[in-house]
Length: 252
Image (tube, rainbow, N blue to C red; front, top):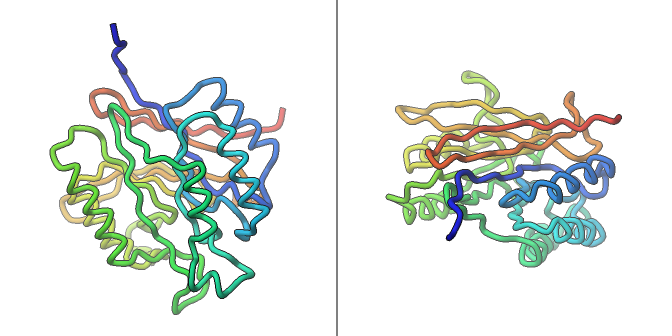
């Protein structure tokens, strides 16, 4: 008899920044994966610090060593920093090789993860690190959601940059983020996972008559911004309820 899966558990990590990673925090996370065997791990960007070949090699070895399905999203740090020709002509060549080696599309009994790319190689403002949602990339994600119309599973969008600012009324650092949030929520997305800011958060926001959960992971790097290294455990129950457990790394 096949056992009934009562819940889906997903480990959500972000901004590991190989090159300036925190080795102790990385071992702590990998140990939890080995002990608990979640259904999958998703990293919402900034796998590397400068997108060098050596940093991508280290990321590939670590992610493949986790031993569970892994989905990776690109972050602004994952495009070449020193090789400007490659950054502008083939910005995702190195990330794409990593994704092909370790990446998987995560689809579970109670949830499905849909990617959204919020990065551009350059933009008419500084810093270039802030997010931009291009129309074509949003349309691709909306098409994925459209194909899932009628699917009862929880639909979770994964991207690097938070789509909305910390609070309504503040300037949104992600260009096109408000429009993307509204379109995704209207299309049936239930939650969006992101990283980038290195501080975790969990909130429900709304645009128009549609609400969506925003869940942000912290960092496993040494680039801390007021919060310890951390990751999220996202659990989706059979009834569609989504719970988030934040786990902080502290030295004993």
